[in-house]
Amino acid sequence: MTTDPQLDVRSEPPARRHTLILDTYHALTPGAGFELVNDHDPKPLYYQFDAEYKDQFTWDYLEEGPDVWRVRIGRPAA
Image (cartoon, rainbow, N blue to C red; front, side):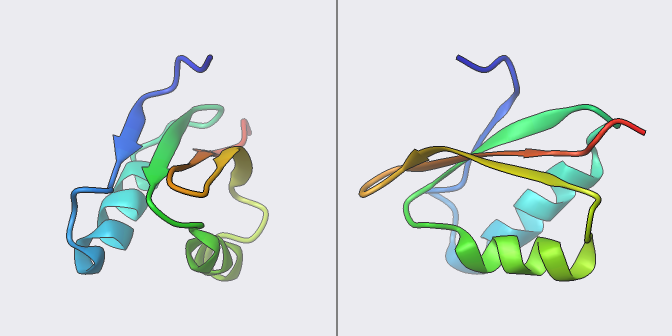
């Protein structure tokens, strides 16, 4: 069980999801994280993070479908 805040984007329009997720990531303090809840594997989002924030984020799958995907996204401590 995580105490990180949860961001459930399943009810959000797909065009808005990445903006919400990235805004949530940018608001994190070093060492903090949040739990992303999605209706599909957010692998394209991982590739975006890897391209734009190389070595500045953590990505841990907590649940891998088939209906619900949960990923802890974090900002490493300095």
